Length: 88
Image (cartoon, rainbow, N blue to C red; front, side):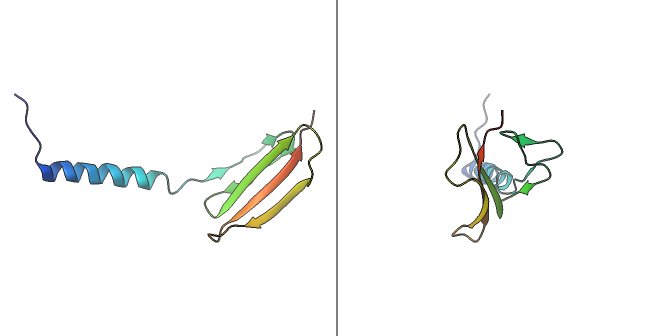
């Protein structure tokens, strides 16, 4: 015999599922440890989260604006933008 859930129980289950899905994605953090390289360049011991972001562009040839720079975003966070040439 199959039991039916009440509308209140369904609403409660949906609310719990929604709150779990939103909580898990809000506190992400990336930490690069020892000996981490992107395109042959060392990015060791850097930490990025929702306020400090990282964006790495790796080019086969020489990039137009080589190097890294911090950029401010409209939400108050900062992004480290790096244009790197691939080391071979």
